[in-house]
Length: 296
Image (tube, rainbow, N blue to C red; front, side):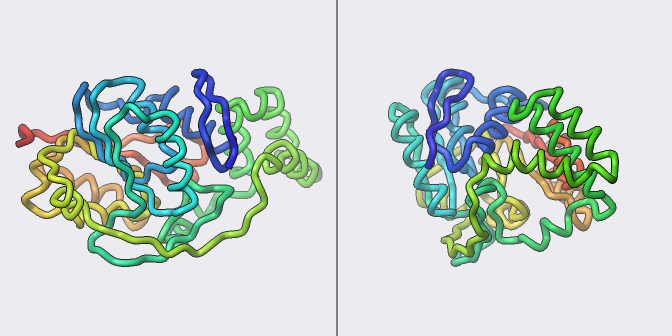
C-alpha cells in the first residue's frame, strides 16, 4: 500500500500511483460521472458498484452533503485500501462498505486480479481480451499509452511525442519500448496475476437487506459484469432507480443491446467515451441513463 498525494491536497492510500492518477483524472478533472444529464443533490442515495479504492465516494463527499453511499468492492486487497481511505477521508460521511460484488444471483465467483492493474479485476478476462481491436498494432497500443500517460502528467508532452516518433521507426522501436518501460512500467510494482474467490449478491438483495427506498445514482464499473448486475434487479426495484452510469465493454454488440435494454425500462440514454486513447482500442464506452418517470 502506498500513500499518494492528490492535486487537490488530499492524501490517499493506493496500490500504485499511476492508477490513482488515472482515476483522479476521470473523476475529479473530467467529472465523468456528472455528465449527460446525471444529477446529484444533497441527501441522495448512491450505489458505487466497483468502488475500487474509493475515489468516486471521496469526490461525492467533497461535492455534496448528507449523501448515503453504498460502495461495493469484491477484491479483498482492494477492499482493505477502500476501508483505509473511508476511515481517513470519509469518517463524517454516511457510507457503508461491502466486500462483495454484484451479479445476477448470489454465489462465489473467481476473479482475476493483478495488483499492478487493480481497476481491471474481472470475472471475464478472456472476454475483455476478445473485446479489444484485434487489428491494432503494437505501435498503436504504445502510442495510445504514451498519450494517456501525458494526460495524467506521468510523462511530459515532449517525452510522449518523442516516444511516438521513435516508435514510428521500426529500427528504433525496441529503444522506444525500453524507454517506455523505464519511464512508466517502473512505476508499477512487479506482480503476478492472482485468482481470487469473491462473494456475489444481487442489487435487489442489497435493496431489501438495507431497506433502500430509492437510489438516485447507480454507478457500475465492473469489467465485463455489467449485464449480470442489471439482471440482478427485480422488476419491482427498477422504478426505485433514477439514474445509471455504466462502463460497457462493447463485445458482441453489447453497447447497443444495453442501450435498448435501458430504453425498454423507461430510461433516456446517451453513450459516450471517456477521453482515453486506450479506451478506443479496448472498445470501452460509458452509458448514461436517466429515468423518464418519477422515482417512487
